[in-house]
Image (cartoon, rainbow, N blue to C red):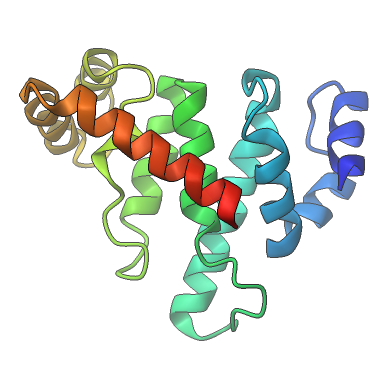
Length: 168
């Protein structure tokens, strides 16, 4: 699986057809996430976004019955979302929001996934965006951030996410 990262780096950060073929496999994506969790992620932004799109397709196929889950990788969408959160880029908020509306199997994604850039930055970005229902998400982020316990919740959430990565 190191090959996927090596190929990605050799391509100058472009997701090639070879890399896309590898990302189509839930098992390969799981290994990729474990390899990336403790690395600097900005240089892997395009591969993570492509992997997240694959996760959304996979979850939709699971929901519709078009695929069964042979790999135990149904949580891949949340693992990849956590990595997008850790990158902290506002441009990923729309992609995360699309996943939260995917189906009842995914359900609504925890608000924490949307505060990677910072609660204020995320809410302001959403206020300025044309993303469907962005105003509701921005309000939810502000409400969450206004609670004095939110930094503690965020820290605990991050720790649980990292623990899950290391146990998978």
